[in-house]
Image 1 (cartoon, protein in one colour):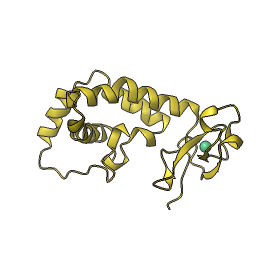
Image 2 (tube, protein in one colour):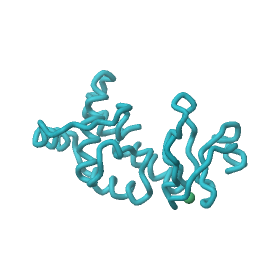
Image 3 (cartoon, protein in one colour):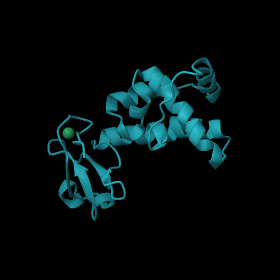
Image 4 (tube, rainbow, N blue to C red):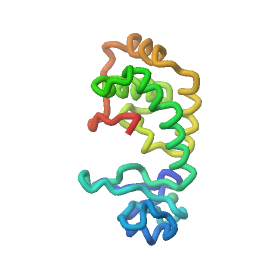
Length: 159
Ligand SMILES: [Zn+2]
């Protein structure tokens, strides 16, 4: 597996007992997490099925920024784009991922909220604030035929 680095400081992270990271956080009390040895309470859940971190490890401020970005901007846009239909979600996520990646100047497979640093959360917030899904569709039409690079997992920005 590739090395895992903290989103906040770039230090290599290790899989440890959650209790060692933050004994007061019930969310991680009984699980192993990927934790930064430098930043206090910087961690990410371990996805056992994939045997990999579920996100890039980060401290409370970054994790909170990711949650707010997903809840207030990303998920409403996915909902708008899919019309609330579960079957249409993957395409809406794919289009939104390409749209945001283009605006942020990163690769679509790097454009995933769970991987964002605090600064990327702020950048994504600026890029998505006030955006309607019609803007995302217009972008998709302008870039039709451009090489599509959705994330291999299909999770994209909303993961
Ligand atoms: Zn760190």
